[in-house]
Image 1 (cartoon, rainbow, N blue to C red):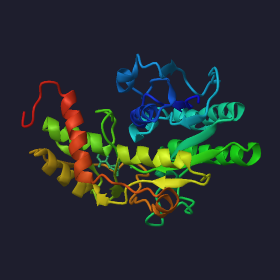
Image 2 (image 1 turned 90 degrees about the horizontal axis):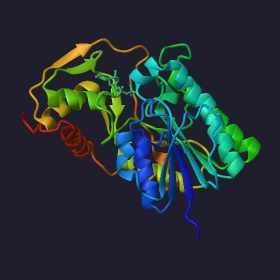
Image 3 (image 1 turned 135 degrees about the vertical axis):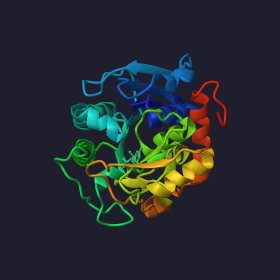
Image 4 (image 1 turned 30 degrees about the vertical axis):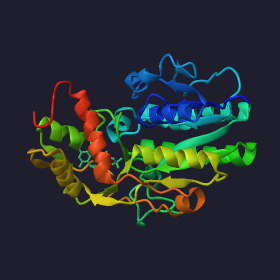
Length: 319
Ligand code: UDP
């Protein structure tokens, strides 16, 4: 019996590195590929020296060469935080388009099963609530945020084309807001911003009036959902997210309370095309994968706060 071999693009990123851990734990040989633009070698430092793990420093918008057989290709490479893709618009478009093409081409040539990391951003600023997989979305193609949304929409389209025309076994996960250890402190997303602002005693920056909603899932729940989807027979997109919805202002108050912080809450301008509401409908994931989130937000925030505290070397609670 040979062990499965799995390529994870973006494997040094927040979600990619958790996938590396999970697939190694499942007995796979894991090849992690990353150009380290937004990925971080610290996320995979603990895996260096593991004989079943290999890191390849490569930009997947260029031809991907991997020697030997590959059972699975998981395509997670992409800037994923709004501040990153606003700063790296061309790279974001390229990795969603050219990078997905290269990764699909590799999966086709090796006969691998392919899984695309897609996103709730394909729904844009949604006109239905909650969002289910049949919704086609409301995306501004020429807005600043469109570089990510359209790249992922194209990536989904290309994935389905490879499935239909080349017979590649494909899976598409639409990932909703996810948080947890290994997010970058300066990631720019609301969870890392609020927790670090609270820990540093800085004001919590609510964009707009804070009435916009998001539904946050803890990373371990996501990884479980991705693993189940990969092993399922489902080629159509599946939402993986936690339907527990909150307004951003309520969330700021919750973070203050959970971190026991005296930080004030301040209001800053709402970024362009910021979706007003977001909540996954996870009926498909429940029915097809027998999956639902298990980690409640307060517990997930506690664990994530522990992680960020551990980065503040020497800083203890209340300092
Ligand atoms: N947000 C905020 N303060 C911050 C960072 C983000 O109020 O310091 C808001 C942002 O405008 C959005 C929500 O929090 O409405 C979630 O933003 P994030 O960047 O985490 O993810 P998004 O779901 O927008 O991709």
